[in-house]
Image 1 (cartoon, rainbow, N blue to C red):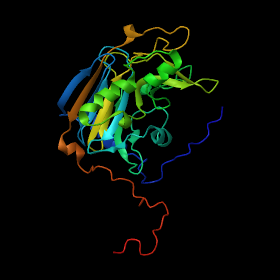
Image 2 (cartoon, rainbow, N blue to C red; image 1 turned 180 degrees about the vertical axis):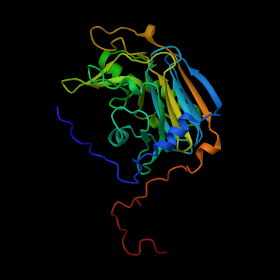
Image 3 (cartoon, one colour; image 1 turned 90 degrees about the vertical axis):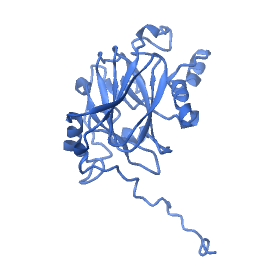
Image 4 (cartoon, rainbow, N blue to C red; image 1 turned 90 degrees about the horizontal axis):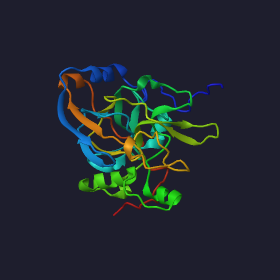
Length: 281
C-alpha cells in the first residue's frame, strides 16, 4: 500500500515544529520534586490540577489498564482538549513530542507528551497502535442502546462524577485520549480494540503548557482483553486495575526560555462586518 502524505504538515516555525531539545530536557531533568501522587481505583474517576510548567505521569501501577483522559484550561473550562483536531494535526495514536490541542476559538497546545514507555510498541500485526484518538469514551447511553441495560460506571459516567467538585457537569465531559488503549481500523474500516500491551510501571508523561484541570477514568473494560459487547461478552471486572497519577515540579532552570503558548492569533470575526454606526452611541 502506498503511503499518502499527511494533510497537515509543519512549516518552519509553526506550532507543529516542536522544540524537541527542550522537551527532551524536560523528560530527562534531574531534581524533580513530586507535588502530588495518588491512585485511581478500579472503575472510578478523579480530577486534579497540573500547574503550567509541571509534568504529569499516568502509570500502570498493577498491570495493563486503559484510562480515558479529559483536559481543560483550569482557569477557563470552555477551553478544553480537542481530540479530533489533535488527531489531524498529530496522529490517530499519539506518543512522545505530540501535542494535545485545545478547541476553538483557542487552538493551542494544552500539553505536550514528553515521555512514553510504550513508544516502541509501533504497529502490531493487526494494525493496532497505542494511546488512541480514533475512538472515544464508553458511555451508558450506548450501553443501553446495545444491551438494554443500565450500567453507571462507564468512562463517561466516571468522568461526570469526577468533575462535579470542580463545578463542571456532563456537558463539559468531552472526547478523550484513550491512554494505553490499543486500537485500529480493520479491513472493513471498522474500529477495533484489542488487549492493552502495558506492563506494571509503564507510563505516559505530559508537560502542562498552561494551568490544567485533568480528569481520568479507569475504564470498566480494564485491559480490553474481554469483549464488552456481542455474543462472547462478559463482565471484565477480573481484568480491571487501578492507575497511578504523579505530578512533578521541575527545576526552574529547566524552563528557561519557555512560556505558555498564546491562544490562536485569528481575530475571530469570521468575515462579519457590523453595519456602519452599529457601535456608535
